[in-house]
Image (cartoon, rainbow, N blue to C red; front, top):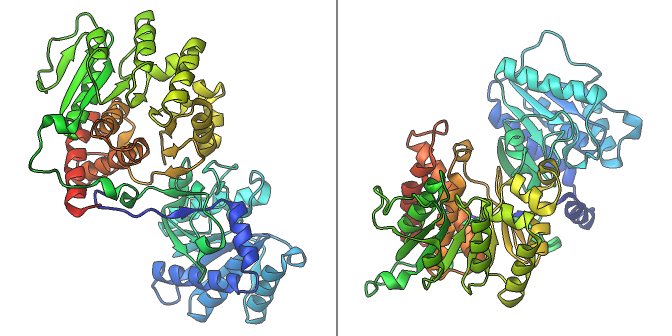
Length: 504
């Protein structure tokens, strides 16, 4: 989508437990089960429609018992499979189980054979899962996914799809792949990053009559345009190109000039007054035939040019020349964005890390790192799998280690600051998984930096705009399959101007 969006608070499981404890005198399970029944009813409108609910051994199962009772009262044909021991249920869940049974409900041990379903509800584990799903629970997860696909019916997860880590978005063994997720009290980070979006489908929040932010400080938030709305001001009529900054891109080594062109074009079309490219390829063209407004220079000349902001890395390569130029770039007192090979060189070269440390000590919060997961792993000296297992944790470690603003790109990109704040970007689509997409993102952020935006707002806005542009292009019928990075640039320009018109 390209319209303005609002941020929402995110809470990890530990914070949710504090909120639940603070509201222990309130009937939270009854409210959760009723909210689940309401959504289930809207997804399954046929009178007497067959509904399958899976109830687990904890409070998520209690939510399912309450929902099942309400659905029976509304005339739906409810089948509930209970994968647990009634004598070992937590007290609230045990009470919900007894009321379900006393009202005539039957807790089945196994899936009814030869039934077709209008709706399946996952109430197995929610946010409380501490280990990989296996055994009977794994069989039920697999069956729920298989039956939902067979019957082409909605699959509703309660609080969090079973098998998904609600804190990190990583999988814990087999997981429910829901079409809808109804999460309780507040949204959780894992629903929006890593494997979360593929498992959750459409996410909605049932707040259960609680104001979570009054009871506990949120862990993080999603990105909304209000986070940078104060910067979305129409341009003054009495202005000129010098009013909008001089952006530089250092990169474009042999066979990789296109990466620098993409970054430069994005910076130009997002409003930089002037854009200079310093290309390392000795055979690079004298000008960009598709964007002749770009000013191409030798790398050394670029670094001698007065710049408002500089992006290093698109097509940079890892040669000795690239390393020497990057060291010189670190000495410039301008906002500095590092991407691609600039990050690979930083991970590899100890002296470059020392130079960066001196820079960030003198000019904190003016360095931005934009790694994808593999680049983040190199910077942290770990594996890509470890980064993906806790994407937010990796972003926070990078921000602390390098004293820089960081975005770990990917599904649900994570933006982290040096003081421990972080956000998840929730827009965008698989069309962004294409060569050059990261170069375009670098150019978008660079343009905002060059125009004088504070670095953290430039990063938040650039990442959000990147996703919104992809959504807008796909909505116009181009992609997500086959979407090219260059197509994002005009989409970003259209979206950004719409934001300016709307004021965020």
